[in-house]
Image (cartoon, rainbow, N blue to C red; front, side):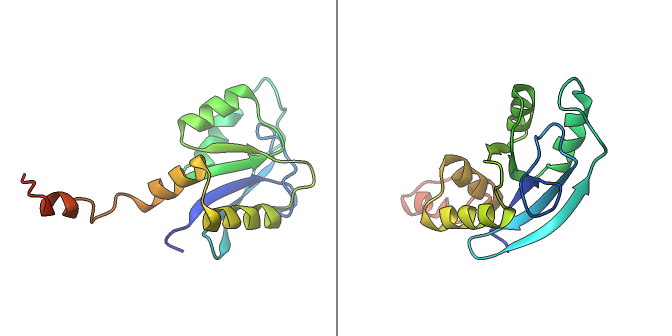
Length: 143
């Protein structure tokens, strides 16, 4: 899965996205590419209130390092700003959304032509194209 991106889901049962980001008790982290997905990590947290405890966010953001997106029921403005600054796209979903369906939707989007956040995530994961300077060299560019 060398073209896979990492995405996280705020979940209590590992089947549904059923948590607010700030008070999420656990996250399921998956590697997802257009053809397959794989659970990479299931992280557990203690009981946390939704508001008034900004320290809880840093632990979660640390866990999400390397993730392109996090799916949750809701997320506060402070958390949105913090995760966006780490290159993680917050995605709010409707109550009852299953991780399986969200992964299928993500894979469909990868195949059909990704949205701007997903295209950026995929290109960051791939890194620069090693062939990018060949055209310049063919035009006569020199170091």
